[in-house]
Length: 436
Ligand code: CMC
Image (cartoon, rainbow, N blue to C red; front, top):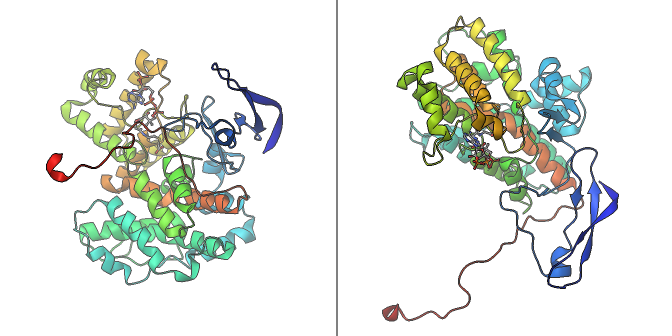
């Protein structure tokens, strides 16, 4: 980051002396005011719940221009990555800063595929869960449990430990998600097949059985690979910030990523893809396209508590570029499977059209986000709705680990420790229980 020529001056109406604060510039995007000395100089904190105006770190990984609807991983537009690269190339880019050449790609793929199996003991963890457990509950437990298996790589101050943990996490997440699925349907776990692509192997572990050969459909493989690429990173979102905050205490990478999985689960974040599909199914049950108007009235009524899931974003105030790509993939997958007339897809298109023309959404700049179409694609592939967010977690693991490693390597990093505006009781005395 570069020191800007101008400074910010903070003055107070009560006559306290004003203070100057440095301003820094990034390579693109808003400048930041450095408030690190504010408390020492004024005895005051800043107040920004929800981080509406706060950058909590410097990062060189992902850039979003929310007004333009632009998403760049290490400078490359998401549209170009989704069209010209596969997920493992994108992982290499996010982790190491550059797209791999052919030899680097082969080496990286080999390193990842060498780690796709999980310790056989993992299945005993699974057996402790109810068969109807939510996959994200299972994933939170399993990812955290990985730290119990890799004592050789839990020191995040050691760059080699960080690297091998990154590879292990990227390699093992598909295996764990597929195991969580197989467990809930009562089928045998399928071991990974390292001759398949990353997405192809995931399809195999999900849908193959030991009874008959399973042939990976290349259109579905490509669609899944694209889902992974589109979800791989998204700068300082809630789960990534959770991973950074958790990792800032020096905890091991598996524990930090488990915290990210837990955060992602919520319906305002990664859980939106599941919530969006459930919402579309509810509208379908109400009567389908003819009921969209009625549903929209509920969404616009602030007292109803109903939100249009898959719409709106803290950063995008324009069409989410990932949603456009996902809509394209959705059409390809439905065509491949002969589901062009899929009622939920038609319903989603109708909802989108009505919302984009409605003043409520226009004024608030609410556009479809990545989750609006990803559920329909996953459902068409055969992935059950409760597993959608686990697939998101699988893909986002690369971003989480890249951001965690970037933070640990940053000489300015400190344990994250937000402050507060205290509004509770001031000191008071405890009365004996009989007098309370
Ligand atoms: N449906 C109806 N109204 C909405 C929606 C929506 N989906 N999203 C925002 N609004 C309204 C909101 O009520 C507020 O209205 P008003 O100004 O009258 O009070 C205004 O738009 C601004 O919204 P906000 O809640 O201040 O925005 P935020 O930045 O705090 O929230 C969000 C962003 C993504 C949590 C929110 O848009 C939302 O809940 N969307 C639905 C859930 C969803 O699709 N989440 C996935 C996000 S993308 C993938 C990911 O990050 O995991």
